[in-house]
Amino acid sequence: MNKEPVSRELFDDVMVPNYAPGSIIPVRGEGSRIWDQEGREFIDLQGGIAVNCLGHSHPGLIGALQEQSEKIWHLSNVMTNEPALRLAKTLCDLTFAERVFFANSGGEANEAAFKLVRRYAWEHSGPEKHEIISFKGAFHGRTLFTVSVGGQPKYLEGFEPAPGGIHHADFNDLESVRKLISKEKTCAVVVEPIQGESGVVPGDLEFLKGLRQLCDDHDALLVFDEVQSGVGRTGHLYAYQMYGVVPDILTSAKGLGGGFPVAAMLTTANIAASLGVGTHGSTYGGNALACAVAQKVIDTVSQPEILKGVKVRSDHLRKGMMDLGERYGIFSEVRGAGLLLGCVLTEKWQGRAKEFLNAGLDEGVMVLIAGPNVIRLAPSLIIPDADIDEALERFEAAVKTLTA
Image (cartoon, rainbow, N blue to C red; front, side, top):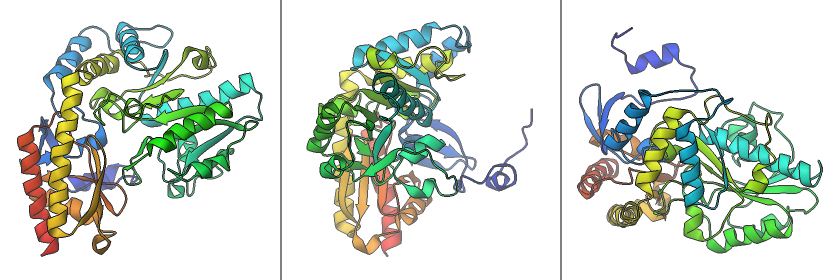
């Protein structure tokens, strides 16, 4: 095994350049702290982009992985396995769902959902009813289908021609959906309850309720992409439960495995019937290792004290960032829900979010951005209060440097 030292420069020599990683290489994590190759410590408010919902090296997840690794890792989908069945049953028990399809990533879960809505409409109404309505600013993945349904043209540039029959309305604008929806042609409306990548923008309650009603009136399916907002991130197991608006299909990934690759598409028995044998698949979907870890994640995150704690931590972090923003004149608002927060830069600092991210790294705190104008925070759902306080102190030091 090659154990030669590696550096950030090696990335440029051996990796496809579709990513532009920072200069540090983390090598160890525990709880909400990370250490790099040089032993420098960072407080992690990134959470692997809302993935590491229980932090790093969580003993329960390590135990679940170790226990399953000594039994069986992988089976082809001509067989099922116990961890997958148990996890599917748990997800059905805790949500509206009656059926579950497992995949490996949010993009795969959304690909399955988008194929399903077209297949369902094709079976029940015919090929004319194939159009999908999504929203400007949306992000649903990087496959050709999901990037086409997503509402950010920059991610589709150079990959055309895109799949057809996709329209984009304005997020939080129900009238723009009314102008596009058709009983004869629309098979589904796809929405993130909280748009993540475009700035952590929560959906308005009346908007999401209105989408549910429009879908009902036009025999269309409502799909909630909860890849980022799910698995306790908002203080509810899934954000649809916070809003009280039940979709027909829900996609989940990121936090579902707490860092282990796993994703799920949840739906009803009637809709799921359209994906019969051979219509869709995933070699690693429902992998025994992934499902065993995800089971521990769901069992842990779904506990009332964990979900209640998310709201308490959210208030703590939100207040700290708002206070900091007011003192230095850098944030106009802090929006979002639970521990998915977006700190919106004031007009003076527009376009400089990446500078705050880099300054934070210099001071030992890891934050995210969501576009050029928003600092995004998605830490562990169980981050200690002391770590929040220290992260705020470190971020303030970064702000002082930038605003001096």
